[in-house]
Image (cartoon, rainbow, N blue to C red):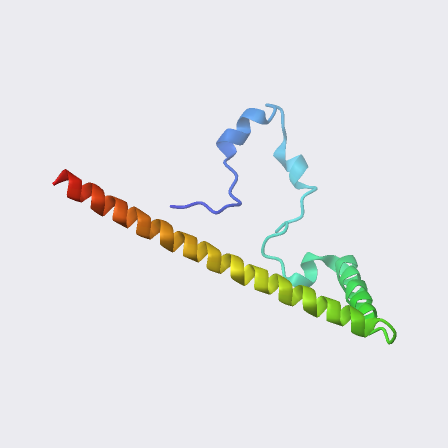
Length: 117
């Protein structure tokens, strides 16, 4: 059975815990479902949603500014298209490299097999 990535091996952890440690005292300070199984509206709390709203408002004011908004939108569009183009070209280069290496390995193994026979 495969364990999830957030599994804690308590046997290894026991070496670092003092013998007189009372887990019930610690558990009183940790909320249940700490970070797991919570709905998104509760996960971040009211301050998180306030920060998100402030960030979106700032983004909107920056991009839709009457005097410099068009230039900022054009710069954002250019940077996004450049990043996507570089990502696509890098993926194509890696794919081409992988094909070449596989082809070379195939030819090398075929050559090695023909010399062995």
